[in-house]
Amino acid sequence: MATAQNPAAPKLRGGVQPLRAGQGMSFVLRRLHSLLGIVPIGAFLLEHLLSNFEALKGPMAYGAQVKFLNSLPLVRVLEWTFIFIPILYHGIYGVYIWLRGRSNVVYYPYAGNWLYVAQRWTGIIAFAYIVQHVLRQRFLGADLPNNPGMAFAKVQHELSNPIMLAVYVIAMIAVCWHFAYGIWLFAAKWGITSGETARKRFGWVCLAFGVVLTVFGLASIWAFVGPQYQNAPENVPISNLMAPSGSSPLYLNSFRQVS
Image (cartoon, rainbow, N blue to C red; front, side):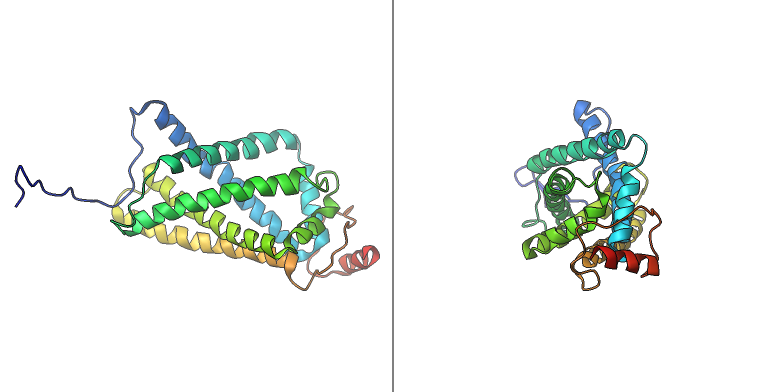
């Protein structure tokens, strides 16, 4: 029985702490961090995975996709406004949250605590990977915006290093997990899924979605390291923006000419 000298232990409850008003600037920064994780960063992740999936069609199709994306109107403004700046804010503020947060998986090994820890660590892995990936693929080496035909070979050379291949695989799993669970957190904290039952059901939806994204990402990696397009040419002609379907005669002839 609880007494004044031996008060009852506080009852731990599961769930996600809702966003609350009256928390000053911290509330605004956290809300912005949460929102940017879905739009535009999450939307960009989906587009990036779908674009990379073109690698399964070969170097020409992949180069054509890179050329298409870099030919969009105001592409550099869009790139900085909706990709680089949001990712920097989400990543840096996420590190701040990570440093200030606490987990109790040793004393309270509930599923929610483990998911919280996994979300923090996958966020760190994802942010570190994205920074190096953008630097290496966008700003260092071959200038892909002006030489999109070199895109496939550039990625293939990087993945030929077993260490980098392992980094890509681990990072792909971490990014997809972080985004899928981030959707669940977003829906819970913003009141979209109200109630324990709704959160549990949506959790399974997010889990399935994360698995699908991971399969897409790993399949794209396989396109660069698998046997079908080994030793791709350094540059491929991509004057025809139409991505080939399978191994069409047009693609095969062009590939042989530049091999």
